[in-house]
Image 1: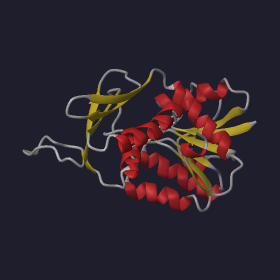
Image 2 (image 1 turned 120 degrees about the horizontal axis):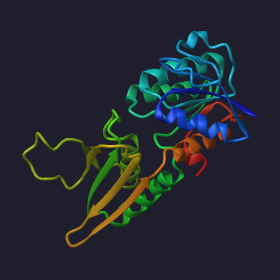
Image 3 (image 1 turned 45 degrees about the vertical axis):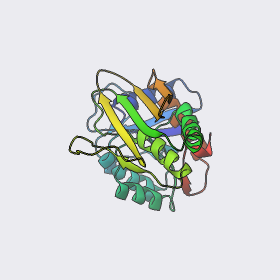
Length: 248
């Protein structure tokens, strides 16, 4: 049985991960980490990382960037593999994560959905066939999401850009501009409202028609299940940096 430390166990996704583990006979929640111990769990919940007494087989992190880096230090010092699903990380933080993968196995993805990772491959192929279109990405999430655009939207854009030899520029804000759209840009639109789990649409606008690819997540459970797939994959791996590409 794989013993898991859940970082951010009180959050929406942390709770989903805990529930997924409870319903999966391959896993056990060893302990959790969060800003407070609400008393809702039977396993230990630590508010200070330095007080963690247990040694997990793997860490699953759904939290915020600062908390991710903090638990990464624990993982590195104790040689524990870690699955990182937190979004909104800076370029510097992502670089540091990859540096740490020289010491421990790290599995990172801004979106743990298998279908989203399939979508990455599809939009890259479509982009190569529709090179002359205007590409826009629209993403919609719940009103509590703090980063915009979403990590998934950026991942989709990066997949397209790589397929087109990195010739695209990203435009995150047209509000302050008084100029027409550049031909080589990918535009982003972010919508926040209600309890939307996640929706991403990549649109390819031609002169006379539009081709769109959309993914909708109806339950957060899909991301928790993906994180556990990553954890099971990672637990016996050598040091290194792994992504959903390695299991899809």
